[in-house]
Image (tube, rainbow, N blue to C red; front, side, top):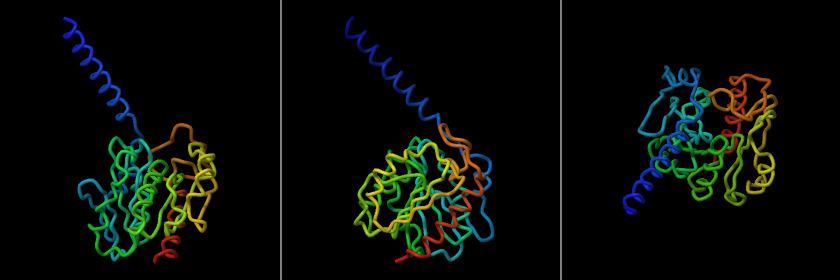
Length: 242
C-alpha cells in the first residue's frame, strides 16, 4: 500500500512540475505585427528559414551577424532589426532558443557560418540575456568571429584579451538592464571596446514585442531606436573588419 501511495505522489509531483514548466514556457514576449511584416522577402533581401535559424540575406553580402534573442522574447521579434541591417548590406541570422532562453543553448551559433560561405566577416551578438550568452560562446570561439555586439547586455566571460572588437549599446531610459552588473563586468571587455547610449531609448526598443515589465518610458519610437542601432552597427562593422 505504501509503495502504491509513494508512486501516486511521485506521479502527482511530476505532473505538477510539468505544469509549472509549461506555464513558464508559455509566458513570453511575442513578436508583434511590425516584426511579422519584416519577415517578408523583397527584391534585394531574401528571408530564409533553414531549420532553426531565420536569415535575412541581402545581395552580395560579405558581413554577417548571428543574433541571440533576449530572455523570454520570441526570436522573430528582432526581425525589424535584422531586416534593417540587411537593407544596409549585412546578413542577419536570428537563432531560435529553447523556451526562448539563450542560456539553454549557448552554442547555438555553431555551424551557421558554414551555411553561408560567401560571408567573409562574422560577428555574433544579442540582446540582454542573449548578448551575455553570445559573449560566452564568443569567449570560447574567438577565432571564428571578428567581433561581438552587446545590446543592453554585458559579458560575464573574460574577453579582455580575446582580440575581438566589441560594441555595447543601450538606451538612456532602460529600466531592465542591471547597471551595477554592467559596470562590474565591463572590465571583461577589451580596453578599446565601443560604448554608445541611445538617448531616449529603452530596453525593449531593440526588438519589436511591445513594452517590457520594469522598463523605462522611451522618448523615441521603436523604429527610431532600431534605425539608430543600425547606424551604429554598420559603422562598427565597416571599421572593424579584419
